[in-house]
Structures are given as C-alpha cells and as structure tokens.
Amino acid sequence: MDFRDDAVAIVGVSGRFPGASTVDEFLAAVRTGTDLSGRPTPGLELFAAEHFGLSADDALLLDPQQRIFLEEAWLAVEEWGHLPGETPGTTGVFASGGANQYLMHRQGHLLSGLRHDLHGVDYLASRTAYRLGLTGPALTVQSACSGGLAAVALACQSLNDFRCDTAISGGVNVTLPEHSYDPALVSSDGRTHAFGATADGTAFTSGVGIVVLRRLEDALADGDTVHAVVIGSAIGNDGADRAGFNAPSVAGQVGVAAEALAVADVGADDIGFWEGHGSGTPLGDALEITAIRQALAGRTRPLPLGSAKTTVGHLDAAAGPASLIKAISVVRDGWIPVHPDARTPSTEVDLDFLQLPERTTPWQAPDRVVAVSSFGLGGTNAQLIIANAPLAGETRKPLPHTQFHRSRYWLEPSLEAAQA
Image 1 (tube, rainbow, N blue to C red):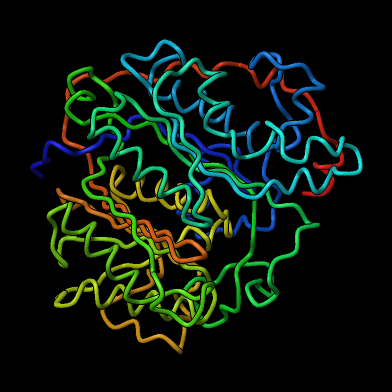
Image 2 (cartoon, rainbow, N blue to C red):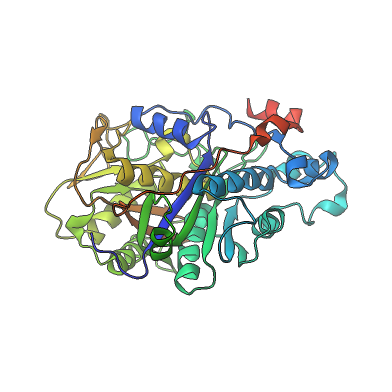
C-alpha cells in the first residue's frame, strides 16, 4: 500500500481492561471470544505514587482515572522504546476521561472544597504532561463515549499540523457501582451483546487504552516499530437530525464514515473488517448497521463486523481506544476475530453484506484496512481508518518495563472491594 504524507504511525500501545492487566491478555480474550466484562479491572486500587513524585496522601485524592492513565502512558512510551521526558522532539498529550465517580464515591471522606479541584478528569492531560515532562499540547477531550477515539483523531491532526512530533493519546474510565445510569441503557445480564439477538443494553466497565503516535515518515526514519498506520480520521456531530439529544443519527454516522474513507482514499470494497461502536442497545445497533450499509453502498463482498464491547463491556471514554487496540492487532497480526453472538445475530437488523464471524480466522491479504467507529452520547462521532504497516528493516525494541509495579501499593481498599 502506498501511504500519503499525512499517514500517522502507531508506535506504542498500552492498556488495562476488565480481567486483563495487559494488552496481550485483552487480545487473547478477543481471539477466543471470551467475555471479561464482569471481572474487575486489575490495579484500580493500586498506584506507584513515589514513582510519579506523589505522596500517598496526595495520590489518594487523585481520581483513579488520573492514576491509571499516568501509569499506562509511561508504559506506552516504554513500549515505543523511549523513556518519558527523553523523547525526540516535542510530545503532546490528548486524553479523555469519564465522570469523576470516585469523588462521589468518597465524598464523605473528602473536604467539600475539593469538589472542583485539580484532582479530577479536567486535568488528565496536563497532569500527564507535567509528571512525564512533556512540553507539547496537552488537551483533555470531552465528547462522552467517543472521547478517547476523538482524542486520537485530534492527535493525528496535531502531528500533521507539526504542532508536535509525538503524541500520547487515549482514554480512561472508572465506573463505580454507586453511579446510576439510565436503566434503558443497561444490559439485563451484565454483558454487551453488540449486534446480537439478545442485545438489550450495555454493560459499563472500567479500563484504559493508550497509543503513541508519530508521523509515519519520522517513525520509519528513526527505526520505530510501527504497529499500524492511521490513514484517515474524521470527527463530526449528529446535529439536530435525530429524535432527541440522547438519540443517534444515521446521517451523522454516515457522514463521519464517508469523510474518513475519503481522507484515507479507500473505497467500499477496500475495508476488510469493521470494528463497530456496538452499544448493544437494539435501536443503537440497528441504526449503526444502517449507517455502515449506507456508507459502504455499492460494496460487492462480505464484510466481517465486530465490537470490543462484546469482550470488555462499555468503557465509556476508553471504549474507542479499546476498539483501536483490537483493530491494530487485526491489521498487524492478520486475523479476523470471532464475534461471541455470531450464532444469534439480531433478528431486527438486516445485516446484508455484513457478517458476524463465527470463529477467529487468519487474514493474509497484503493490504489490510480496518474501520474503527466510536459514537458519543450527545452526537459527537469519531471514525478512524487504519492499515497494516509497511515492511521495514531493523526496528526499535521496547524498553524493559519499569518495575514500578513493585512499588505500587494499596491506596484504596474500599475501591477494590467495590469493583470485586
């Protein structure tokens, strides 16, 4: 595949999910169709405070979203092959997080003056830049469920505008039991059956997903390991063309998909796998299927469809990065993942050329292109198109992970108990 000058390389990946403390554990569950959404996210109650220059008391006040984003951002940079603060050029941070449910969970133990302080998600990107010694743009992006993937799209734009040379980008979410979601959105069995016949809602979970991005030309020149290449991205909003503020819009989803495909310069038949948003609500899934069919009008061959939510549930601001990490492995390693509800697809949805794979199979095409969708409550939609990386010579090896896990200690027993 020939890449344009605006192609962006993904050179580092890190994450933590329900029942999976590493990206490899998450991908193993995706490959086998294993549902992890009912399991606690490893390490929410732990933090290497001293490693990041914080006292235990200060760390205890931090929203856990800041804690686990800091740790995984460090690990993602190491996986790239550098230490934070020693990266070439200017590094930016583009991050998204969920509501500060931790503050509500612990409000009986905190001073009321901390309700709108520096410990919440508003300072997610800037605290990461401060603690990791980064001087590029540091922006916290808020667009609800699509925030993490929108942050990645904005990071790509910043790289192409030469506002930074490297970008750390992703999303994080910590869901606590005390937080009440609209019952109409919540799955009855605690699983997200995206595009399945039993889909009746989504299962909200906790996790974090982060990627490190560089301009492809720079990454190849420096011998970076390129996991995948972002060849197109788009962000849009549904506007008023929908049933209500909380309702999705087919036109809005089609628009953002069409823009990303146009930017990537790929046609309907070039996409080999579609990693959907897959909310697991009957209406949301039906509208998304309709939007994909319209965006790929004229397609002549079957298209496998999936959603990371069938593996780890709905990670809110981290949902898009989880889907992206899954898609990175699909194009890099050459495989089409099983869909857990493939044998019982939704009867309300005409899948047409879309297919839910019944088993994981190899994908050996020389050019592998995947579309990744993430839609936010309120109407902000993000779309990425990624492809497998060009062949390269000797590439940079990741650094051995900092053993800050040995210095992590139990900050919050009550939080761990709440997640169990």
